[in-house]
Image 1 (spheres, rainbow, N blue to C red):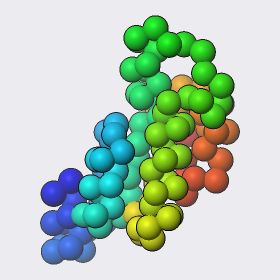
Image 2 (image 1 turned 60 degrees about the horizontal axis):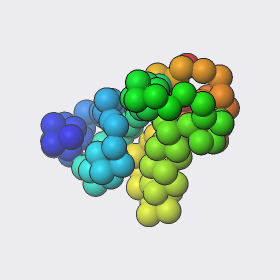
Image 3 (image 1 turned 180 degrees about the vertical axis):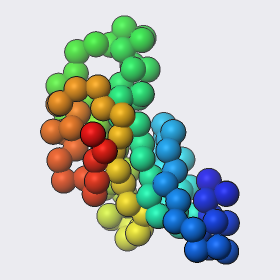
Amino acid sequence: IEAGRILESQHGIHCNLTLLFSFCQAVACAEAGVTLISPFVGRIYDWYVKRGQKDFSMLEDPGVQSVTRIYNYYKKFGYGTVVMGASFRNTDQILGLAGCDLLTI
């Protein structure tokens, strides 16, 4: 995240930070002024499935909930960082994030 801050602020290099799994990481990216984050919806989902939770409705999916929370926070507080959901495991995850800034499918 610090590398992203330096590249963006000192060198004008736009960064896409990936492998984000927590809300605090997403907030730190926005505070650092990175251009884009790509939280991995499917990887978050996999963590819950591995621990025995397998049935989620579209909006109860933990990956969808995580990205929705990040997106809503960014919009509420006026951050310019773009949210691009990534690493989907099923179509419900994609549909659950309709309206997010970007999705990579």
